[in-house]
Length: 113
Length: 115
Image: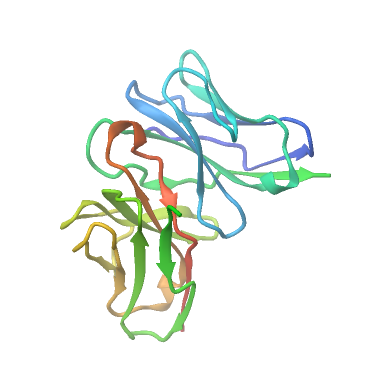
């Protein structure tokens, strides 16, 4: 599986957009980019995923560069409740085997008033 | 409500006393897995299961057992717990079909302390 690199921490003002980067320069053609977040010690929560095209859902937007070597998760209007650790993961989903073996350390996002 | 249910939420035990952490999902998911989370180490996969009676080792399987006799249940068994298994444990599940693989649903966690 391709490895990902994320900044260990970021902060953002409430109401502003939070842009969380992820580098996955070794990603291969059939690997998807997934984003999860974990609030305190709760179970991680799926946010969004994509392969090539940008994606948007009710929680966030995912922007994947054309070469697919990096991506950005965008929380358009961050709230205090978005304070969490955000994980970027790449994983092939077209074959058998474990889907997501390991979550790295992620980015700790702090949204301040 | 679609969910993954783990029990217990907290567990304190002593070295060598067998224990089981239960995990159940009501979404008819084929795939289930167990993770442990330790400070500074992220979430590491212990075991996973692609379907009933199909299980495989993850990154850190030593000291753990699992079984998948029914689709909805995937218990984690510690036959002889040791203090280094003190950790926060999560169960997760997802659908098998391609576009949903990797979209994991997690339980709320089990904090285990082995004295």
